[in-house]
Structures are given as structure tokens and as C-alpha cells.
Image (cartoon, rainbow, N blue to C red):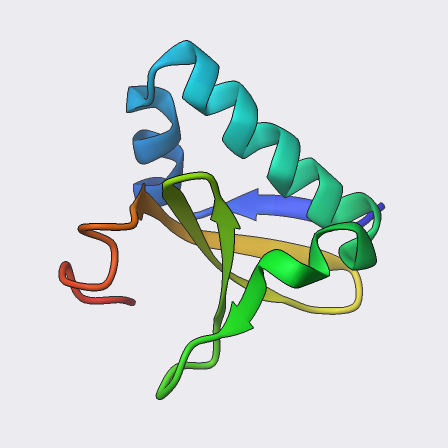
Amino acid sequence: MRVIVFERKAARALDDLAPEIRQQVERDIIALALDRDSVAAQIAPLQGFEASRLRSGDWRIIFTEGTISIRVLFIGHRRDVYRKGLP
């Protein structure tokens, strides 16, 4: 399992989610850390950024990954996540 590191903005967004949505997002992030292939269909690279996005229902998780860690940059609703300006 790779280490999961949350940027401050992503951690705050996760804390603000409703409990059932938070569990769903956490489950998908853990699945990514344990076995990327299990969520590969929900992952896509972001154009113009050195990051990828993971779909979790109506929520998007913006992240970068290395061999030993996953850095979660931003979590937001699909309607808003691309408008707010990515890091």
C-alpha cells in the first residue's frame, strides 16, 4: 500500500462532506492506494496538469502519484471541481 498524503485544501474538503459521501470518497482513495487496477476505469489524466482525477460518484479526487505515495490535491463535486482552478 502506498502512503496517502492530503493537501490542506483536500483534507478540509473531505471533512466538510456528508458522512456517507465521505466514506465513499475515502473507500475509493484507499482502493487507489492498495490496488490502482481496481479503480483504473475511474482514473483519467488531467490535460495541462501533472495530475489525474479519480471519479467517486458525483465527486472528483484530483491527485498525483509516485512509487511510494499518492498526494490528494483537491476533492470537489464534479460540477465545480474544474471551474475552481486546479493547483
